[in-house]
Amino acid sequence: MSEPLILFNPDAILFSDHVLGEFSDLIYFSFVTITTLGYGDITPVSRMAKNLALLEAVWGQTYLAVLVARLVGLHLSGSGRFD
Image (cartoon, rainbow, N blue to C red):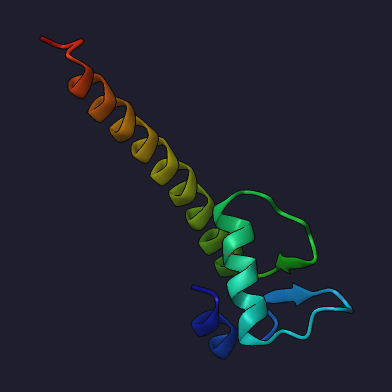
């Protein structure tokens, strides 16, 4: 999600000294954001980068909640509790 933003605005994301800003670092940033872990070594700076990071974090939590609810629903329907 961050790669097109970096191409459009190279200063949209701030990298710490030990992060090179390569594609693999952007994938890492995406996973850290979607899991809402947030180490802080890569930081969104521009408004658009912050909004995209926020959307990705909310999407990650929504996906997790829906997945767990679906698995619980399948387990309960398989166990006969809803009969």
